[in-house]
Amino acid sequence: DAMVIQNPRYQVTQFGKPVTLSCSQTLNHNVMYWYQQKSSQAPKLLFHYYDKDFNNEADTPDNFQSRRPNTSFCFLDIRSPGLGDAAMYLCATSRRPVDTEQFFGPGTRLTVL
Amino acid sequence: AQKVTQAQTEISVVEKEDVTLDCVYETRDTTYYLFWYKQPPSGELVFLIRRNSFDEQNEISGRYSWNFQKSTSSFNFTITASQVVDSAVYFCALSEAGGAQKLVFGQGTRLTINP
Image 1 (cartoon, rainbow over the protein chains, first blue to last red):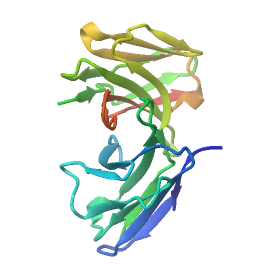
Image 2: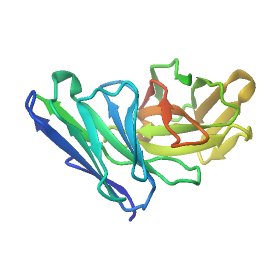
Image 3: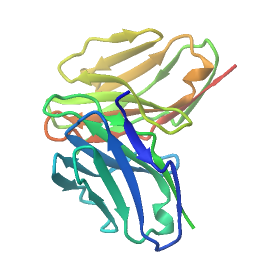
Image 4: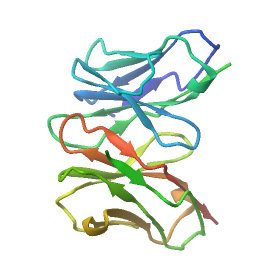
């Protein structure tokens, strides 16, 4: 089945130790998004790729970066994780130019020790 | 700026009761989309419905129905004859019509259906 896959589902890292979260999709969608969702809060958009065009949200900390080497894969890099970065990270995709819903992956829950 | 408000933080009902989740939105755009997503304990956001701002027809899908009223900027979601499996956090969201369709989420309503 076509889907959005996130690995790993659970990630534990140490304070200040770089970590990379992975997202892949078999939907061949143009747009890929990364959201951060802290406990009992709404998902918050960090950035998105429209094809190879990277778009950062104004309030996304510099500590967060992303790479999209090809259509199928997108990575979220956290250069120096702090305790406040512990959250669920959700990847989503959508197809453009046709307006449609975003398809979400299962998320990666990041714990920072 | 776009904003979505879900005033109900938590709702708890007994199985088979009907329940309505409220959603009020703010936007200056004339064309926009409204969504409902379900987030079960597993964490994945599950798409339920998308509504175009020009389409105010109410929609029914099985036990689910949605009432879109542009005059009051509301997009409410009703579950009829609720079931324990409906227990989840439900998010209402708004997006621009063009561009990359960035979603702005409400704070979510945690729905608990008790047997």
